Length: 448
Ligand SMILES: C[S@@+](CC[C@H](N)C(=O)[O-])C[C@H]1O[C@@H](n2cnc3c(N)ncnc32)[C@H](O)[C@@H]1O
Ligand code: SF4
Image 1 (cartoon, helix red, strand yellow):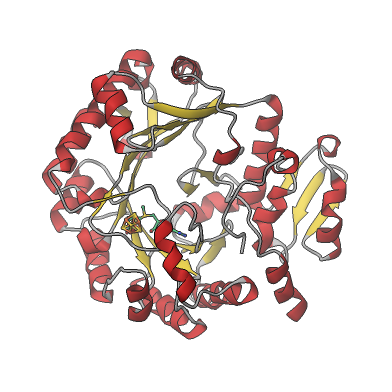
Image 2 (cartoon, helix red, strand yellow):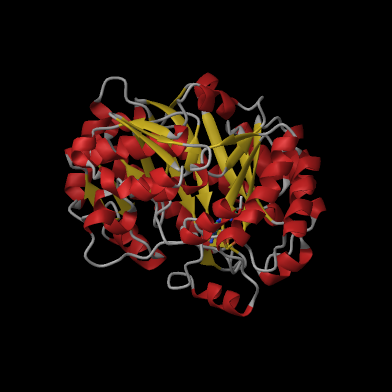
C-alpha cells in the first residue's frame, strides 16, 4: 500500500484532462472561419450523423475562488438580454451556413457555464424557444441537461426547462463543509441543495448529478467523508468527484490557496479514496476516472457495454459525431476538427453582433494520426483498455509503468490494471504525440 501511495507522489505532475485529443493547448490553429463552417457542413452531410448542441452561459453572481471555468462575474442581470440576442444571432449565422442543422436529429442539448440559472425563468424560455423550434428533436431519445448552481435556482426555472424537454440536471455542490465553503467563497447550506433535489424530483427530472471536488483548501479525510455521507442522504443518480485543478496562472483567484492547506500527491488522493469508499459502500458504480452512478442510471449501462463517451462536457452516455457550441468561449467538435469561439465577451459580441460572423478564435484540423490516437485515448478514458498499433508508439515509455504494475502491454493492446486506474491521465499522456514532441512545456493541472 505504501508503495502505491508513493506512486501518487511520483505522478503528482501536470497532465491534460483529455476531454479532447489533442488537448486545447496543443491545437495547431490551422482552421479559418470559412474552413470551420465547411467542415461542419461536411460532417452534418453524413447520412446517419448524430449531433449535440452546447450553450455556454457564462454569468455568475460571485466568484468561487477555485473556479477554472470560463465565467463572467456580475450582479447585473440586464446583461441577460444582450447575451440572448447574441446567441440567437450566432445560431442564425450557423443556420445560414449549415441549413442541414435543422433537419438532422439532435441527441443532446447541454446548458453549461458559468451558471445557466443566472438567467431568470422568462429569459430561459426566451433564449431556448427559437432554438428548439428550429431543431429536429425526437423526445423519446433526447437528453437535455443543465448545470445548476443550487444557490440560484428556483422552481420556475426548473419548471420552464422541464416543460421545454430538459430531463437531467447537474448541481454544483463541491463540498458540504462550512469551513471549506468559506475558504472558497461559496456558502451553500445543505438545505439549499436538498431543496433543489426535491424540486427536480417533483418535476420529474430523470437524472440528478452532483459535482463534488476533492483537494479543496481545508478539506480533510473526515470532512470529505461527511460530505460523502450527506451526498448519500440525497442519493443523486450520478456523482462527479473532480480533482481540484490548480491553475493559478490562468485563474489568479487561486493564488490565495498558497496561504491555505492544500493537499497534494498521496494525501490528495486519500481524499478521493475516502469519498469513493462511501459511494461504493452505498452501491454506486465507479465510471471513468472520476464518476459514479447508481446502477439504475442509464450511464451505468453505457459503461457496461463500453459505449460510454467523453467529450468537452465530460462523460456522456453516447457518442455524437458533432458537438456544436454556441456562446462565448464555447468549443465545437466536428468529424474533421475542433473549434473554439472568441474567449472574451467583447470579442464575441463584436464578431457576432457587429460583424455578423461566426466567432471563431482558434481551431485544429485533425490529421489521420490524431484521429487514431484520439480513439485510443477515448478508449482508455472510458474503458481502461485499447487496441493499438505499437508501430506508431514508443513502447519503451511504458517500461516504468509496466514494472509498477500500472499497465499491461500486449502485442496489439494496452491494458490499464486496477492499480493503474488512478493514473489513467498519465497513461494517456504516454501515447500523446504532442506531449512527446513538445519543445516548450505546456502547463496543465496535476494528474492526481
Ligand atoms: C460550470 S460549473 C457548474 C455550475 C455552476 N456554475 C455551479 O458552480 O454550481 C462546472 C463545474 O466545474 C467544476 N470545477 C470548476 N472549477 C474547478 C477546478 N478548479 N477544479 C476541478 N473542478 C472544477 C465544479 O465542480 C463545477 O461544478
Ligand atoms: S464554480 Fe460555478 S458558480 Fe462558481 S464561479 Fe465557477 S462557474 Fe460560477
